[in-house]
Length: 372
Image (cartoon, rainbow, N blue to C red; front, side):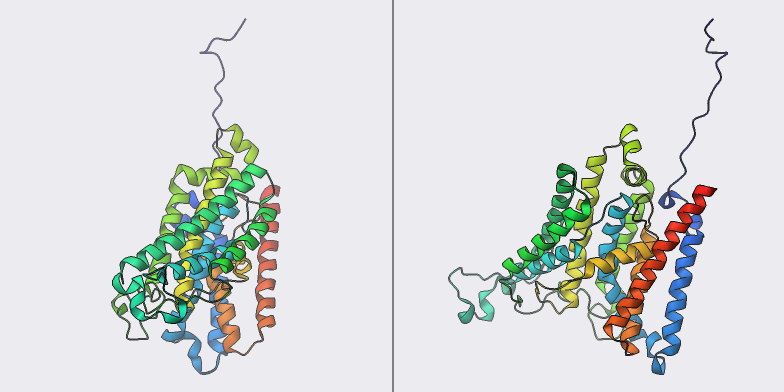
């Protein structure tokens, strides 16, 4: 005799554990992993504050410079955080930043007449002289747009070809860098005059900047705004839940109705978008010049920032706050090492050692949770 619905035992569905980004704000701040990284940040900063001569490391000028330097890494790390949470990786981010820098400079350098030659141009031959606000806006849109398209191409290639992201983005890293060199004709592009785009990362507290009322450089405010949006997206939206689900177990996510391929394409596109924003900051940081070889090696520092901040290369874990902390740790090590006279190889060794320690910590934490 078949059991009636009334007599059938009811089974309560098991609810999945909430992802780190979806926990409450105070719970997230009190997460031992985040607290540990904040403590590490404080210890590293205190070390250099006590050892750099004259106490210059904690002076306002140096602190502002630290924020400005870390802004490029941190902005690109926002997109890399999403990619790594989804179980991917992007080795082309440094080339994407360079491509955004070159395209922005190329637009700012547009001449009014096609027949004007490089040797005979004067200041009045450029469109920026007639459109000092509009043309930089178009240059910014072009730089971010081409970087977003580059990220979209990364996602399409990874999903369409079904090749591991490491190989795909290694190839596109060289393609995008070569494209940047072709656009710049393998030499720096010097836009005529100055613009708001080239002043995006100018200091405010320690100089007579027109942005002094903002307290922080506009680029730093742009980073903070982007970080808030990225955190909200990961914590409160369906896309954020899908990103964590795909990184935790892609096959299970697919069986639950998650569009795995679509999600992967979206995260790589977002990675390109944030890389484009980082390119605008890099353009201002290097003096408003389109250098095709800029941001070389940035991909390693950006990935390291995410991993040091708690992102797992196995996927499924990571946070915006942790990645920001990781970017600050890398920048403090770099600036502190320079001010103490450490050779560049020693600085790289220190960052590498911390990266290995972060990965080892992630591995042991995973094993401990499995035992529980």
